[in-house]
Figure 1: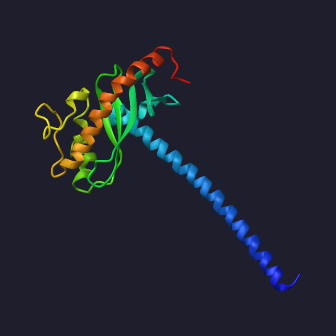
Figure 2 (figure 1 turned 30 degrees about the horizontal axis):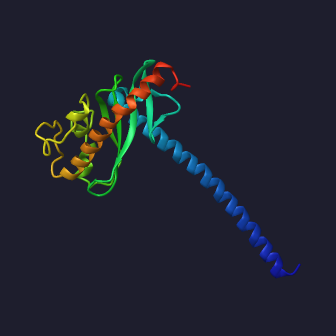
Figure 3 (figure 1 turned 90 degrees about the vertical axis):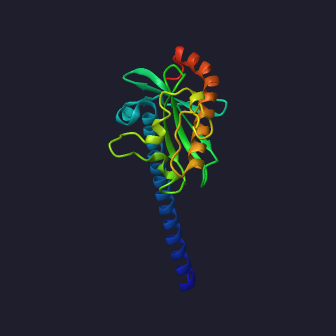
Length: 206
């Protein structure tokens, strides 16, 4: 084997080893990132359902219930059914899509809580949707949704019967989140009957 062939073989082996190492590293990193994302979303669902202080104690059934293309997560607190959490997306944010985690109470009638999963809104303006004011433990804007029925979750600036105050200088973001929550909570009533049947027969737990 001449020098050129030997060098080519060595280079090929080095490249193969490097590619294999990169593939293994990518697989391990991707798995870790996915696990971290799943953990963060589970915590968000728990906080939406039971608040900042008890959110981490919420246990969700291993598999969500899929109804008409949406995944509903059954949450339990102290061994009892606590409510349902799911994610909705609005494309009407000021700077792009906003992913919203919404939780409904154990009787399926009122919004238990809301959290923002992801957004690209303007810092100091729309991004204040997740702001926690001094002395509070909940994001003030999102806390307004807790305990309200779907029809009550409307922006005061758009509806005199609404009960949600907009974020200062961020009406577009406020409207996008509010309308997303209101529409998703209204749609939930259609899924609730099916969820109740599954809960009564214990089909959601594993």
